[in-house]
Length: 263
Image (tube, rainbow, N blue to C red; front, top):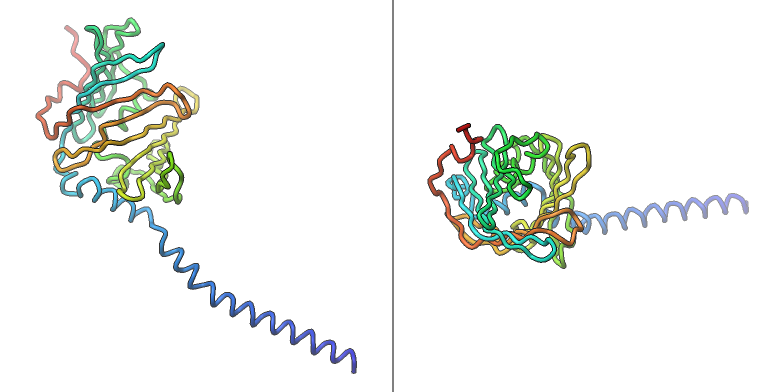
């Protein structure tokens, strides 16, 4: 009799525990569901980023950009160079940095990249390797890595928020079709890029380049960053680009981007 009573008591406690578990699950499920609903999706953040930049129509209508300003380099003190960058859709870019009559050039015409490096004693144009041209290809993107990511053959994933200099930024992972990975950080209030961390293999070595973006100004109906700090992740000697003038849809001769013809 005592044994039977003990069994009944145990069964009652097990049943009571099951009921309590079900009640607890029923109470917490709406909370979890509510929390999940507050988490944005990658597509939602990309849409907000497009709208923040000026909208899909304005981005589509922006066919070229001409940026002029200065490049500040830390090398035994701060060196200031005149800076020029021209971008033209679909995939052309030219960047120049000038000092004391010498001009460094890097360009990509949609098929190949080339450079002139007078500060390293090389005044003739040279074709760039496939590894060296990767960063130039990314520079051709007038509207960044997120816009039209599907058409570019990329994959985008939302990784939650992460602190960027005190800002809880939205973090998106972009895997490009060549395998390079960019982590794009969006400001939580304005949904514009404030940092891009790119990881790639270059000449057999892993490379991480961190770029901080700010001071957005509107040109051609699109917001463009005019303060750009870039360099190796964690390096104290990042170069800074300060854009003084942004010109939208200026006429550009395609010949500027092509490897110079032999004289």
